[in-house]
Amino acid sequence: MSYFEELHPEMDRYLEDTASAEPEILKRLRKETFQKTTQPHMISGYLQGRFLSLISKMISPKNILEIGTFTGYAALCLAEGLQKDGKLTTLDVNEDLAYLPQKYFAQSEWAPQIDFKLQDAKEFLKNSNETFDLIFIDADKENYPEYLQLVKPRMKSGSVLMIDNVLWYGKVLDEKGNKQTEQIKLVNKLVAEDADFENVILPLRDGIHLVRKI
View 1: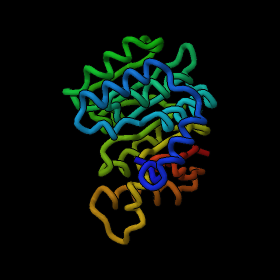
View 2: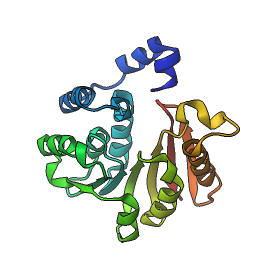
View 3: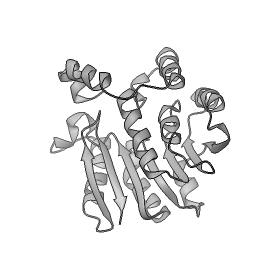
View 4: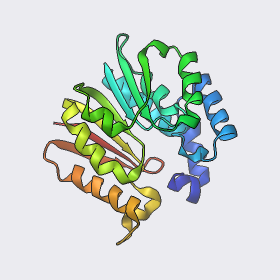
């Protein structure tokens, strides 16, 4: 949930009304996510989805990595910018929900290009030599700093990294928070202090850290 959703819902509706239309496949996926999952708020959602799509289209990536698939909404948004011979690898460990992204990936025009793996992201990254043009992290917050450490060598100059939920419902302003909050604060600090990165946090929904490797 964004600050606008909670504090100024009229502004949130205005933002949605002025954004590009949500593709039909994503409307269906969003509806089914709310019908069949216990934590539907974890979905990227309409506005954030259009942002992810635009970033991907601007970059025109050949190789995308997503850490944290959930029901596949963000992956399909990112796939909109893939090159025709490109590939999107998306990782998750939730076997119970795997049927949903599998269903919608198969229905999409990017079905041959999406590689959905039920695999621990740390294991994948430690055993992969691939480099990625675009990376999106939206997974277990306690491991955000380690994910950053592992994806950095998989980025080349000009690669873009996006990290979700980096404002954590405003809890990043708390002097002392729980483990999730402290790890999010740490990953923001690590990015900001890394001379190899240029970055900005966007207050879109729950905060997206937009990072480019120099």
